[in-house]
Length: 97
Image (cartoon, rainbow, N blue to C red):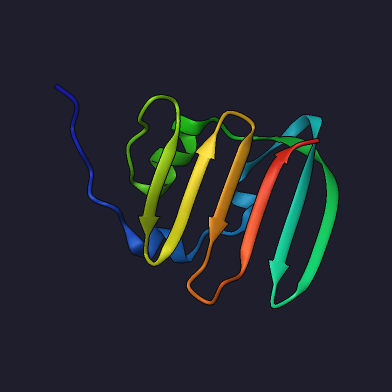
C-alpha cells in the first residue's frame, strides 16, 4: 500500500522553472506567457520525469499524467511536457524541442 503525502505548499513556493529541468543531453523549449507578452527560449537539458515532478509537488501520477492544483497553481504534466498556469493568468510551458 502506498503512502499518500499531502501537498506541501511551502515547497512549491520555492520551486522555479529550473527545478523541473535536468542538466544533460537534449533541448527544451520554454515558453512564458504573461498579459499579452510571450517569451520563448530554447535551452539544453531534459525535463524531469512525471514521477519526479509529482514527488516534488506532493501529488500523485494517474495514467502517466499529472493534473492538479497546488497552492493555486494549475499543473499539467505528461512525458516530455509540463504546463503551469498561475492565479494571475501567467502560463509556463516546458517541452521537448
